[in-house]
Amino acid sequence: MLSGDRETATRLRLAAAVAEIEGLHAALLHATDPARRIRLLTRLSEAGHRLGELASPTGAAVPPQSRRAPARQRRRAAILRGARWLTRLTRSPDHP
Image (cartoon, rainbow, N blue to C red; front, side, top):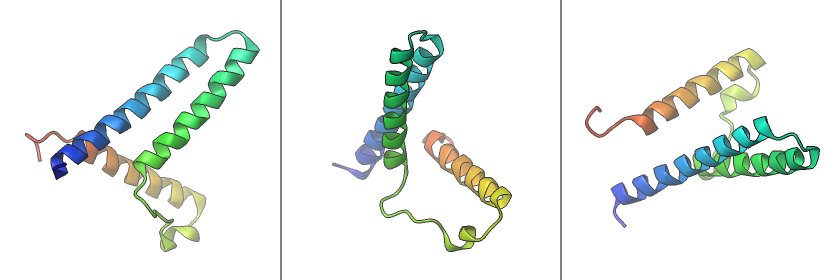
């Protein structure tokens, strides 16, 4: 498998995981039966864990500088990392 094919496959798996979460969330918003809501919440939690595993690089650790940072700085750093990650994923080949 070529590197581009591997990257495309990874993006497709991420998109599928996000779509699954969106579908479960939409179903949860309209569910009225308590037992169904619990099942949907369980499946949503599992889907979130799968997305986290797909999205995080293997062996990813918390950067040492963020371990002792205040919560506000950690949140800000996480938001910035997420924004960089999303823009990298959504960048089209025509626009570097």
